[in-house]
Image (tube, rainbow, N blue to C red):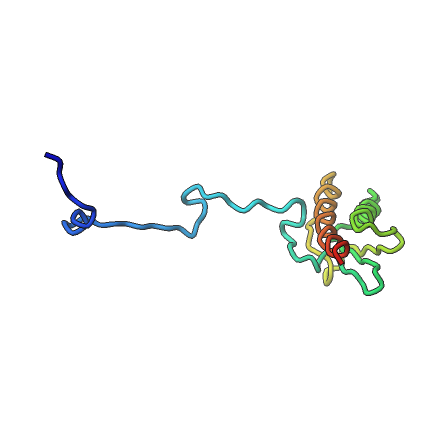
Length: 133
């Protein structure tokens, strides 16, 4: 003969139903959100990276400084290309602690890769908006 114990009867006999959740994603192997590339991961506000004026000219900000390696020229070209603006319509401001994103130090060969990737993505957002208008 097959036992006929329902879930309700099982819980009435002294068992318990336990439901758990965690606010820590690492606790149960939940996936973390993917980090943004380059310096954008620590500086997620677009206004820290770019401003488009009413005249259509752009000002881009970087936390990197020129040490003779040509980084500002490279970042200026990346921004102009991504915005599809003539380079003469793009102005770059470097390492102004009141305005530019905090990108840490300028050292080694990763500066253009990290800051350039971040700047390219930051410029893509307003460029997409300008194309739709």
